[in-house]
Amino acid sequence: MIPVELTADVVASLRRNRDRGERQPRCHDGVIRSAIAGAVRRLVDNTLNGGVRPWDLPELQRRATGLGVVSGARAVSVDDHVLVAELQPGGARILLRGVDDGWRLVRFVDGDDVRVRPETTRRVALDGWGPDAVLAALGIVKPDWVELQHANQYLGQGETEYRDGYQWVDGHGRSIIAEQIKNEIFDGATPSSSYVRGVIIDGDRGVLLTGRGDSALIIEG
Image 1 (tube, rainbow, N blue to C red):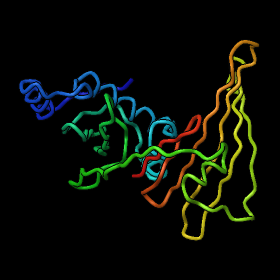
Image 2 (cartoon, one colour):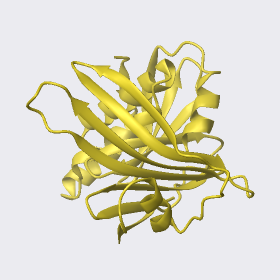
Image 3 (cartoon, rainbow, N blue to C red):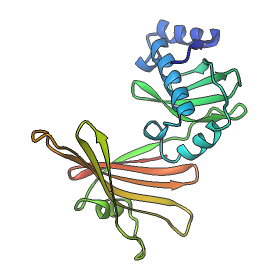
């Protein structure tokens, strides 16, 4: 794990919050160091998929290809909602959004703009199950030419992942995914688990749906 330093401004900001009794769990120095180190590791190793919003992923991957060697990082500013870190020795800056007790990588910082776009969440009922239920919940009509795709991947330790879904780019340039993911462990004892997922990527904005049972959570950002 790369070393992460906290600048004097960040240390002072954390101390002020602590003295006022307002410091959130994610604003402890250990959590901040771990979040920055993890974000840098995923950028360098190109393992971002599970840790960022789908609509943030393409630009993060593009910018990461030009980073070069990253030997360290330092937190340069923090408040309750936004954490900015500078990568060394190149000086590129990344922005992380506060989420619950941790931080999620959002984008690279250009200039002095450290704003984050608001995200909204809502829970919806699922009418049925599978990719078609995802599309219905998102209010999307699938073109007739889009066919159901099947894929499976062995994950190790006797576990296999199965995916059934639709994926296409619509007439407005939006990338759309609706799928059901099922995981099975063939040990004769562990029950299978499944969930549904929907993604709409519209430039640097998007929608993410995840659901189990008869309901799903929709996040728009």
